[in-house]
Amino acid sequence: MTSACPENDLNRLAGLLTLRQSRTCALAWGDRRTHAEIGAAHGVSHWASKKRVQRARHRLRAVGIEPPPGLAARRRSPAFQLSGIDNV
Image (cartoon, rainbow, N blue to C red; front, side, top):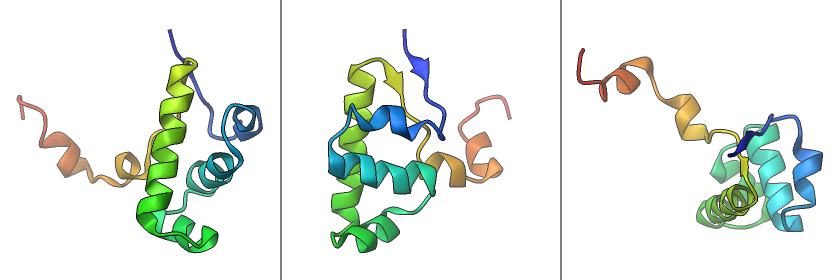
């Protein structure tokens, strides 16, 4: 059973992640920055920052913590979300 991870509880998660991952996740989940913005802040490509967030998600799920939803889930329009429902 996994527990929900509040977005403002990043200090508790910092001990489970590497330093790079915790800094990246603080920007992604705390400040809600895009992968391109995170990459620019850390001097890496947006693909590298995306991979860091992905690795952090896998690490948190491995210890039973469900990470916050990603940016894509928050940015999808209601019409896009409804397009996947069969009974519309």
